[in-house]
Image 1: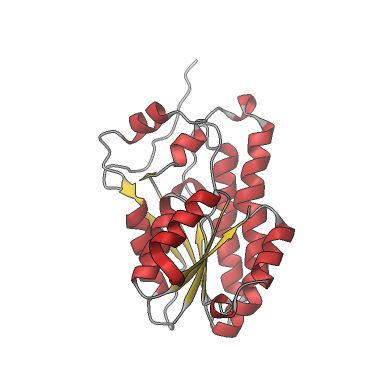
Image 2 (image 1 turned 60 degrees about the horizontal axis):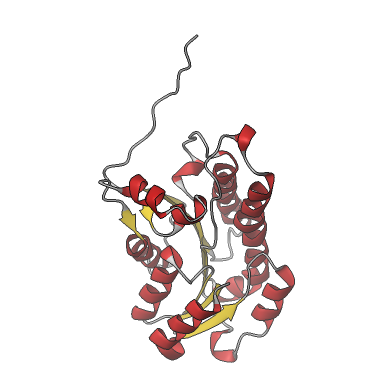
Length: 247
């Protein structure tokens, strides 16, 4: 039985991925800061899930949690770096520097640390790494600033990993979704549910389950295939036009 390590498994894409992989016969290790949600996930899915109540930004705690994995979950065949967030929608000159730092700490620093911690195991198993980037990595938009920058890093880091892991058998993929209706915008706006509902209203956006199904598809492809990058959008979303300011 293969084992996936999925960060940020308490909501949205992460939770949907945990459920999808367990349903497909995988064991799953998942992390999260909300203990009650991890407990509910474990109760729902049973012995196929091992939960780690740890903040991915806490390098020492993550290192200890990985070192202490029980034997049945210690062999890691797949890492899904899902944990991440956006904070704020203001232009750069009005943004909160603490929000910027939190995004960098979570979306970049924690992601690279967890990846480095698990690389020896993934090389041993000739496993795979799937990183959650975003269409924001490729298409700038007003208010995207640091969030978009972190996701561009994730995309480029994925390509760099692919180059460095050449010959090891480890596959690396950057998944780059557009609009997915989860708690993402509620978190980004400081809990404004109305703003989230307005953003996704009438769009027929993608769901966490849509992205989880894509993750599972990539993970279960024949091992001689590598998806380098995969960009997804709902049909009702497309590329922004150029912005023009007039005197």
